Image (cartoon, rainbow, N blue to C red):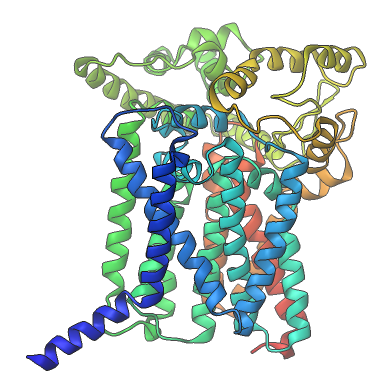
Length: 576
């Protein structure tokens, strides 16, 4: 009996070791100080609701995670791998904080501002996924001003970047000097302009991209080092898989990639652990969390946007050919009259500015009708897609070309989809906009867009932030944002846009790497690459607007994996 108790006690110490206890104690002290001092509530409106306790509890565990990871880095700083990881993380953090200071208060867009506005009252904004709102909540409790979100994001990503690059290079490269070449190239890659653009915004896509980097780095490192995967490591991989698959729905295929990659490492998995159990849990979690987000979204408006790109063309051709029954089913959810009345507008524009979607009533009876109408709409849309494949494909292809930075001119003006303009969305004044218009730097439509987007400025100044909300230097901010966005002072595209805001370069590189690995019959790396590129066709089909943002995880990981494979071929004799 005593022996059994000793074994249980020893096991408990192993599961919850002293380092974790110390980290939790530090987190608890910081959390208590933040609560008692009122620091934790500075950003938020005073809400006396029971769910506020949930956000506070979540914040405690967030602090614990951040502190524990930091302490692990510090404790292992004498190990070469972690010493390198700390240096990479520090370099990344310092560089991006300097950039943030120049573009202060950050490269916020309307979606960020809306989520920030909702979180002011502890409300979930499920349009950007409820996980995004929870992430905002813990960051804003830690640093209670809008830019605090960006600072926390940079810190989290710096840990991921430092650990992932160091782990990969130490696992695969034996020679120290060659390892430095790998590190420099990978470090530059994670700071490419599109990546910087979204790291300094509140969009979920930035952290999603780096979580995918961490997942792939962990898998590749574990496979190369041929070490035993214990319960803790498998739990970490499973949680990462769930986050990647759920946070942006086009990553859902990772629940299939995950078990395939584990299969290649089945010899390294503890015999007491079952791969299928982890895979079933991952699938169940993805389904459950997806359903929760649908409930919080109240209606299917967000999922409808996946049909937007070819929709106007399909509606017009259906009307021309007399497909009245299909048009009638489309019209149950979409106000087709607005498509006919605005022939030059995209469905995305009509959705935001003309109330394209017919919203449901909130009572249960009408919600049932809404669900029936939604199903009819989807069936009618699919029938139109099957009936007019060429029209559908061309709409999607043209959208992809614009997203990829290939199509850059429209009506004589630059068609830039970096989300950054020659004018400053939040801080520009009307006299400057009139000057840009007069000097032919922006089209009249840009002025119209800016007028309609004044809600961004109103949200920022009146509803979101009252502290640290002004740029450190407006001219410096504008110049740096233009460099990141790949445009010059006259709003025209520079060579930086052609190179960095270009999807074809990384996608062609990863395609060649895939062919090479197929030739070499390196099936593990083949499935790593399939994981990287798997979202591309999904986004191609469902993207509602021409933004590189949707492809950012594939863009980043295509470059990282391609460069890693190319360097491995060049320095093959230095591989472990």
